[in-house]
Length: 449
Image (cartoon, rainbow, N blue to C red):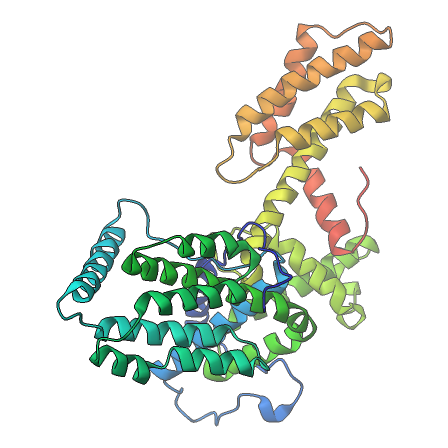
């Protein structure tokens, strides 16, 4: 049995179509640029896009667009399988009370009502039922693994459509018996999580309802098989993902030579930022730093730090579109870390010499909790107001426990004001933390405040 030892995966982390649309937007912006075609990822000159200077630009055909779309879809899916350990697929039902759901229910009801009327006719009509058994046979055969030839032969013999049709012509077909056989085979092939669903099929006496339920459980089993396959190919994809993505991007580049314009601009800007960061570290002018001395790691660090600080309403580099949502999440997390660092600095300054490392660590933990989930929809001002009140309470509590005088209302107002204005743009403390963080991250060094 293919699912004998497997358990259902965790919560679904679905792959969003917004990645594809964002990449399409990026490619659309790139196509409008007037840059010359660039070299491919590989160093092989034979794989580079080359055309005579005098030749007119090649028109993009519909087939090229569809081929690029397929490459992008495969690339996004493979990357998501590797990057997200909880990735799996689920059957998506239309929303409740939606038109799509109503139409689906009406069509399904009409189909099963017709089947029921045909089986109850005198004489019964079996043609639609035979087609269903043929479809069930193909689904069951798709669940079999290589080497299960005996079971494969048995299923083909019992669910032989030609034989069932001959029996139906002589009114000798035993549909309940065929249904019982199908349920028995399903119980052998299903994952453990589907055992209860299959047992309920055995308790059904209505053959039409049983067939209806059989198809429902088979749909669930097909999704289990897909997720089982994903689970099995993940280790292989992890080993080959880099080469696979390089090949896919190369195929995209061959179809659309300007497909990586945004990535080129991003790398060029990263190179400039890395030069400036290196120059600032060596306390020399940017002109005194040689580009040849910069490592690729330093340039990439600078580029990714810049990604975490960029405006995500714009266009992202095409080569990182597969991790677009993860970068947004990291950006929000980094934003939270900056605010926590600012709050700690303000609190330490407010307490002065009586501040202790243990208390600042406590403030850090409190701020991290109250500012958790920081994003564009987060009401930062309200959160900072609540945070300042909590910190002031903990400050007086710490001072009282050490036998020191508590702070008054004036100190409270000052602390709340300093913390609440962190939400304003170009706050000096926030800008200081931000610049220090970017410099150290770009140089791949730890940050100490």
